Amino acid sequence: MIDAMIDAITQALNHADLWLFRVINSSGQILWLDWLMTAITTTNNWRIVLIAGLVMLVWRGRREGRWCAATLVVGVGLADLASHHLLKETIHRLRPFEVLPDVVQLVGTGGGSFPSNHAMNLALAATVLGAYYPRWTFYFALIPLVVGVSRIYCGVHWPSDVLAGWLLGMGLGWCAVKLTQRWKGLPPARRL
Image 1 (tube, rainbow, N blue to C red):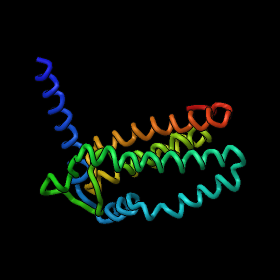
Image 2: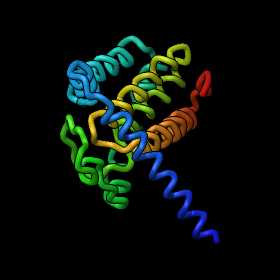
Image 3: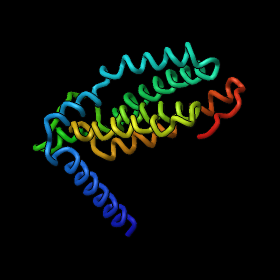
Protein backbone atom coordinates (compact mmCIF):
# COMPACT_ATOMS: atom_id res chain seq x y z
CA MET A 1 0.00 0.00 0.00
CA ILE A 2 2.78 2.45 0.88
CA ASP A 3 4.63 1.49 -2.32
CA ALA A 4 1.52 2.28 -4.35
CA MET A 5 1.18 5.66 -2.66
CA ILE A 6 4.84 6.45 -3.31
CA ASP A 7 4.45 5.41 -6.96
CA ALA A 8 1.35 7.60 -7.33
CA ILE A 9 3.10 10.60 -5.78
CA THR A 10 6.19 10.05 -7.93
CA GLN A 11 4.06 9.83 -11.09
CA ALA A 12 2.16 13.00 -10.16
CA LEU A 13 5.41 14.88 -9.52
CA ASN A 14 6.93 13.63 -12.79
CA HIS A 15 3.77 14.66 -14.65
CA ALA A 16 3.86 18.15 -13.07
CA ASP A 17 7.58 18.46 -13.86
CA LEU A 18 6.99 17.53 -17.51
CA TRP A 19 3.97 19.82 -17.82
CA LEU A 20 5.79 22.83 -16.36
CA PHE A 21 8.85 22.12 -18.50
CA ARG A 22 6.70 22.10 -21.64
CA VAL A 23 4.94 25.32 -20.61
CA ILE A 24 8.23 27.17 -20.13
CA ASN A 25 10.27 25.56 -22.94
CA SER A 26 7.74 25.02 -25.70
CA SER A 27 5.12 27.73 -25.38
CA GLY A 28 6.04 30.04 -28.21
CA GLN A 29 9.74 30.56 -28.47
CA ILE A 30 10.24 34.21 -29.39
CA LEU A 31 13.43 35.36 -31.10
CA TRP A 32 14.24 38.25 -28.74
CA LEU A 33 13.33 36.14 -25.69
CA ASP A 34 15.50 33.29 -27.01
CA TRP A 35 18.40 35.75 -27.25
CA LEU A 36 17.72 37.19 -23.77
CA MET A 37 17.38 33.81 -22.04
CA THR A 38 20.50 32.51 -23.77
CA ALA A 39 22.41 35.59 -22.61
CA ILE A 40 21.09 35.23 -19.06
CA THR A 41 21.90 31.52 -18.77
CA THR A 42 25.43 31.73 -20.20
CA THR A 43 27.94 31.83 -17.32
CA ASN A 44 30.59 33.65 -19.36
CA ASN A 45 28.27 36.63 -19.66
CA TRP A 46 28.24 37.01 -15.86
CA ARG A 47 31.98 36.73 -15.22
CA ILE A 48 32.74 40.45 -15.38
CA VAL A 49 29.80 41.28 -13.09
CA LEU A 50 30.80 38.58 -10.60
CA ILE A 51 34.47 39.59 -10.55
CA ALA A 52 33.56 43.28 -10.23
CA GLY A 53 31.19 42.44 -7.37
CA LEU A 54 33.87 40.50 -5.51
CA VAL A 55 36.40 43.28 -6.05
CA MET A 56 33.93 45.83 -4.68
CA LEU A 57 33.23 43.67 -1.63
CA VAL A 58 36.93 43.34 -0.88
CA TRP A 59 37.88 46.92 -1.76
CA ARG A 60 34.92 48.91 -0.44
CA GLY A 61 33.14 46.48 1.86
CA ARG A 62 35.45 46.80 4.85
CA ARG A 63 35.78 43.79 7.13
CA GLU A 64 32.18 42.66 6.61
CA GLY A 65 32.53 42.84 2.81
CA ARG A 66 35.77 40.86 2.85
CA TRP A 67 34.19 38.12 4.93
CA CYS A 68 31.18 38.12 2.62
CA ALA A 69 33.47 37.75 -0.42
CA ALA A 70 35.45 34.93 1.25
CA THR A 71 32.22 33.14 2.20
CA LEU A 72 30.96 33.46 -1.36
CA VAL A 73 34.13 32.18 -3.02
CA VAL A 74 34.63 29.22 -0.67
CA GLY A 75 30.92 28.39 -0.41
CA VAL A 76 30.15 28.47 -4.12
CA GLY A 77 33.42 26.75 -5.01
CA LEU A 78 32.88 23.82 -2.65
CA ALA A 79 29.16 23.51 -3.39
CA ASP A 80 29.74 23.53 -7.15
CA LEU A 81 32.40 20.82 -6.94
CA ALA A 82 30.37 18.67 -4.57
CA SER A 83 27.22 18.99 -6.65
CA HIS A 84 28.93 18.28 -9.94
CA HIS A 85 31.11 15.39 -8.79
CA LEU A 86 28.87 13.82 -6.16
CA LEU A 87 25.22 14.50 -6.91
CA LYS A 88 25.18 14.73 -10.70
CA GLU A 89 27.47 11.74 -11.22
CA THR A 90 25.61 9.64 -8.66
CA ILE A 91 22.07 10.49 -9.73
CA HIS A 92 22.68 10.50 -13.53
CA ARG A 93 19.41 12.20 -14.35
CA LEU A 94 19.06 12.78 -18.08
CA ARG A 95 18.48 16.28 -19.33
CA PRO A 96 15.20 17.12 -21.09
CA PHE A 97 16.77 17.23 -24.56
CA GLU A 98 18.10 13.70 -23.97
CA VAL A 99 14.61 12.37 -23.16
CA LEU A 100 12.12 14.37 -25.21
CA PRO A 101 12.25 14.64 -29.01
CA ASP A 102 10.77 18.13 -29.35
CA VAL A 103 12.81 20.14 -26.84
CA VAL A 104 13.98 23.58 -27.91
CA GLN A 105 17.61 23.48 -26.76
CA LEU A 106 19.29 26.86 -26.99
CA VAL A 107 22.59 26.23 -25.15
CA GLY A 108 25.06 23.43 -24.66
CA THR A 109 25.71 21.72 -21.35
CA GLY A 110 27.71 19.01 -19.67
CA GLY A 111 27.09 16.44 -16.98
CA GLY A 112 23.88 15.28 -15.41
CA SER A 113 20.74 17.29 -14.96
CA PHE A 114 20.02 17.07 -11.21
CA PRO A 115 20.43 19.47 -9.51
CA SER A 116 20.94 22.67 -11.48
CA ASN A 117 24.34 24.05 -10.47
CA HIS A 118 23.42 27.45 -11.92
CA ALA A 119 20.38 27.64 -9.62
CA MET A 120 22.27 26.24 -6.64
CA ASN A 121 25.32 28.50 -6.93
CA LEU A 122 23.27 31.63 -7.44
CA ALA A 123 20.83 30.79 -4.61
CA LEU A 124 23.82 30.18 -2.34
CA ALA A 125 25.31 33.53 -3.37
CA ALA A 126 21.98 35.34 -2.91
CA THR A 127 21.57 33.84 0.55
CA VAL A 128 25.07 34.86 1.62
CA LEU A 129 24.73 38.35 0.14
CA GLY A 130 21.29 38.76 1.71
CA ALA A 131 22.68 37.81 5.12
CA TYR A 132 25.39 40.45 4.90
CA TYR A 133 23.33 43.10 3.10
CA PRO A 134 19.68 42.42 4.02
CA ARG A 135 18.14 45.52 2.47
CA TRP A 136 19.19 44.19 -0.96
CA THR A 137 17.85 40.64 -0.41
CA PHE A 138 14.97 41.03 -2.87
CA TYR A 139 17.32 42.01 -5.70
CA PHE A 140 19.80 39.26 -4.86
CA ALA A 141 16.93 36.73 -4.95
CA LEU A 142 15.80 37.85 -8.41
CA ILE A 143 19.04 36.66 -10.01
CA PRO A 144 18.73 32.92 -9.20
CA LEU A 145 15.02 33.11 -10.00
CA VAL A 146 15.56 34.54 -13.50
CA VAL A 147 18.59 32.33 -14.26
CA GLY A 148 16.71 29.24 -13.04
CA VAL A 149 13.79 29.94 -15.37
CA SER A 150 16.27 30.57 -18.21
CA ARG A 151 17.74 27.07 -17.68
CA ILE A 152 14.30 25.55 -18.25
CA TYR A 153 13.49 27.89 -21.15
CA CYS A 154 16.78 26.96 -22.84
CA GLY A 155 15.91 23.26 -22.58
CA VAL A 156 18.74 22.07 -20.35
CA HIS A 157 16.97 21.50 -17.00
CA TRP A 158 13.74 20.16 -15.62
CA PRO A 159 11.86 22.47 -13.24
CA SER A 160 12.59 20.06 -10.36
CA ASP A 161 16.34 20.36 -11.10
CA VAL A 162 16.08 24.12 -10.68
CA LEU A 163 13.89 23.90 -7.57
CA ALA A 164 16.33 21.44 -5.97
CA GLY A 165 19.21 23.75 -6.88
CA TRP A 166 17.48 26.71 -5.25
CA LEU A 167 16.72 24.77 -2.06
CA LEU A 168 20.23 23.30 -1.82
CA GLY A 169 21.78 26.69 -2.52
CA MET A 170 19.74 28.45 0.14
CA GLY A 171 20.52 25.76 2.70
CA LEU A 172 24.22 25.71 1.88
CA GLY A 173 24.36 29.50 1.85
CA TRP A 174 22.80 29.64 5.31
CA CYS A 175 25.32 27.03 6.55
CA ALA A 176 28.22 28.95 4.97
CA VAL A 177 27.19 32.17 6.72
CA LYS A 178 26.77 30.42 10.08
CA LEU A 179 30.12 28.61 9.77
CA THR A 180 31.93 31.80 8.77
CA GLN A 181 30.45 33.67 11.72
CA ARG A 182 31.33 30.93 14.16
CA TRP A 183 34.82 30.38 12.78
CA LYS A 184 35.92 33.98 13.13
CA GLY A 185 33.74 34.92 16.09
CA LEU A 186 31.84 37.46 14.04
CA PRO A 187 28.53 38.84 15.27
CA PRO A 188 25.51 37.11 13.74
CA ALA A 189 24.36 38.32 10.35
CA ARG A 190 21.58 40.88 10.59
CA ARG A 191 18.95 38.57 9.21
CA LEU A 192 18.71 35.20 7.48
